[in-house]
Amino acid sequence: MFRNLMSRLFDQDEKSAPLQEQDAEVAIAALLVRVARADDRYTAQEAARIDHILARRRGLDDNEAAERRAAAEMIEGEAPDTVRFTRQIKDRIALDDRTGVLAALWEVTYIDGKRSPDEESLVRLVAGLLGISDRDSALIRQRVLADLGVSES
Image (tube, rainbow, N blue to C red; front, side, top):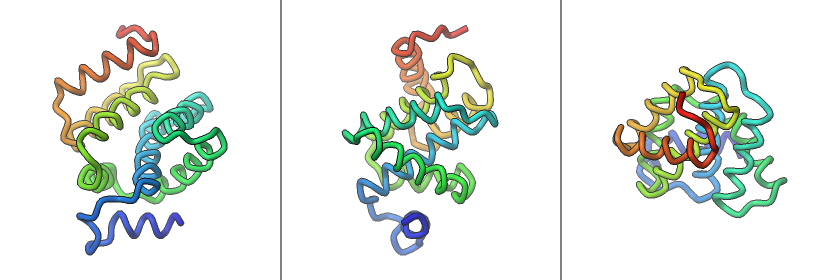
């Protein structure tokens, strides 16, 4: 499954084809894992939040979400650089879904209640690569912080 997804993501012949729903979710989950690992502290709290996000996005049960995250962890380890990986996701999912992905990235970034410059920097990079303006990214970030009850300081 993992090799097949990587080839579907990066195969030149399929670059413009939309991803199947499950493939898109695993690729998005891999991006969530990449952000969580950006500060070299991938915590159980971050993994649990990724599971929660995956369950919420597609109505998965806890086991299905955990399995999808486990697949995403393997994909993330093999995925190319963030720029190339994110561009493949951007080109193959709808803009409306990209804003939801960005909100999920900010959620993973702040779930532990700590500000990590490495995680924040990566999310800002990914936002631009997803075609989301700095202004919209900031508004999404503020909404996520408020929802999580985390202060901006």
